Each structure stands twice: as structure tokens, then as C-alpha cells.
Length: 456
Image 1 (cartoon, rainbow, N blue to C red):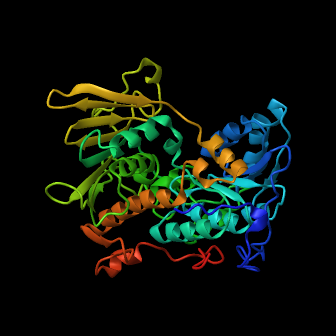
Image 2: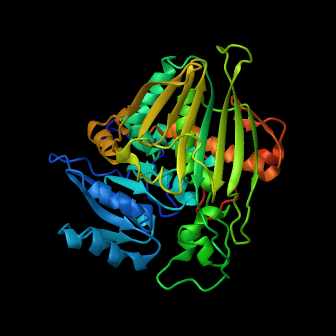
């Protein structure tokens, strides 16, 4: 992607008067410029689960102030403010229920979007149009069309936009990609992503009244109008197609990004996926077991001119598949815990590689002799702030176009699974080949006024 960033005060011309979410917020509502003290004022949107990690991580950075919080559940504000601000002698942040009001706040330089998936792209586009620097949690889009429009917005407006694929900031992942791309494993013909997380049944909950203090209409946003249910609200929205993308689009998106990055590919030409929701009779709609295979062209490869990416989501009882960390320091990491096995495998003509979030290891030749290895964790939050201060998108270590490509694979797999057939995709035309039904599933019917702009 071309380097497109300049200071916001020199940008955001054109699109003047383009309203955001029907509130008349213009693209000329510039973010406040970083002052002489280098302080970045940042807001966190979505503070129920992961949002708390964002609050804590940004608050720990030098010259960064989390000066605003936004959530549709106003019941969360008092506890979060006490826990993360007043108990730590930090200034009390402003609070917003409607993110559109937040985007009008000129004292906010940047936003970190930690909403449910169905809000990610629209919230990011609105923020970009308002002149805010944006870090958007994974997956950056709920469907393929949203990802296209988010990339267009990021490339049009002159702000830093960071995708939430946080492993891009890790020296472990950076050295992994450098090793593979340098040909040290020979021709890498296949990558595998693993997402084995022991997730129990979510049970069944009836529809019921909206809890006091929750703006449910704002929570639904772009999604269809339907009654409230606890199993479609905090966290369990992940397992409902209207709001989430299953575990492949939850934890799995990180490993999908690593697999695609290491393999050195963008969009596939053939996709097939199968699986199901096994063992549990509950409210979950998304599969808890799914295997997806993606085929990519490889003009420089030997034999068949293609590469393969295999991805598997598996719940409940599972084995390690060879990515368990052998480093005692990493034994309690959430990705390689007593229950979970999350990571990647790469297969090449000279050997194979195992990788988890902390480290990678190669095994070379027929003897599978231990070869080169690497490790190291970074700080995606610090990288976002560094990119803002330096006005350099590259420092964010999370380009939104790369995030979109990885999310596209998730959406393609889910479409193949839901239709029950193999799909052929044309990366040039950005659509499935002779398949109107599959193409229709790359977007959704949006509920006004929460509509993704066709020309952001």
C-alpha cells in the first residue's frame, strides 16, 4: 500500500459536508492536533470485555490519555472508571453512549474500536471520516463488502488506521515471515492455522426485556431488528451470524493472518469448508468444528502452480498438533494453556515450522532436526501511538488492507460452509465466479441509519 499519511490539518479536503450517521458531522471536523507535549488523547469504544484490556494497555503508555469511553451499556461506566481511572489516580474520562457524539469531540485524537464484529467497519469508517486515527479490533469487518469500504476510507482520509492483528507487532511473527519469505524453508507449499479452544455449551435463553441502562437499538446498529436475548448480547453474540463470525472470526482470525502472511498470498481462487455445531443443543448458530481449505495461484512454484492454506477450528477435547511451547516461560500463555492450542504450521521442501504467539521453531530435512527459531512479543498499542506521533502508517504494524485480506478468507470459509459447496473466486473482479447466491452473502441488508457508505 502506498504511504498516504500526512498530518490531519493538511488533509480531509473533499467529501465536505458528508454527514456521518445522519448527524451532519462533516469530514472537516478535524481531530485535535497532537500538541507540543506529544500527548495522544484516545477514546475506547466498547468496554465490556476486550475493551478493558485496551483501556489498561493505553493507560500504561507514556503521554497517552484515555480521555473518553463509549458503550451502549451505561451500567458499565461507574465500575470501569473506578477500576481503571479513579482507583489509579487517573483523570476521570468523559462517557458517551452514542459513538457519533464521541466523534464530534475535538479533544479526542484517536479511537480504539472494541465493539461486536457487526459494528467494526461502520464505526471505523465514521471515525476516519471525522478525522480520528483508528485502531479497529479483529476482524476489521463483518463481511467482505464492509472490508472493501473500510480500505477505501483508510486510503482516502489522511489518518493512521491500524488493523487489530496484534501479532504483526511481535518480533516472533516478524522473524517468522522474514525466514519463510527468504526461502530458508524452500518452497512453502502449505500453511495450517489451528484454533482449538475448549468452549462449553452456551445453553438456551429465551427472548426477554432489554436491561435497564442498555441502548439496544444502538447495540443492534446495522443488524436486523429482533428481540433482546442474553445469548445474543455480551460475548455470546460471537456465535450468532447477525453479529459474529464464529470462532474462525474470533480467535482464529489471528492465526489466519499469520498463515496467509507466512504463505505470502492475498486472495484465493478456490475455497471449500465443512463442519458443524456438534455435541450441544443450544442457541449457537456458528459451527464449533470447521475445516476450510483455500487454494492460491503460485506462478513460481514447482509442480502444480499453487499453494494451500488449511484452517481448522475445533472445540472441546483436542490434541496439541505440535504447536505446544517448550519454553517454560510460555507454558501458561492463554494460547497454549491446559485447554487451548492455537497456532500455525508451515510445510516446505526443506522442512517444517511450528509457531505459537511467543515462538517459532523449524525442523529440517528428513531427520526433522531442530533448525532456526525465533521468539518475542511486541506491543500493538504502542505501535499505534508511535504511528500517530510519527505520522507514519508503517509503524502501526497492522495495515488495514492486509487485515481485510485475512478477514476475507474467514468470510469465504463461512459462506462455503453455509452454502455447503466449493466456491471459485476471481481476485481481479473481487467476486465469486458465476455464483449470485454466494456473491449476495458478501454483504448484508443494513438497517437505517446504520448503513455502510458506498462511497466513504
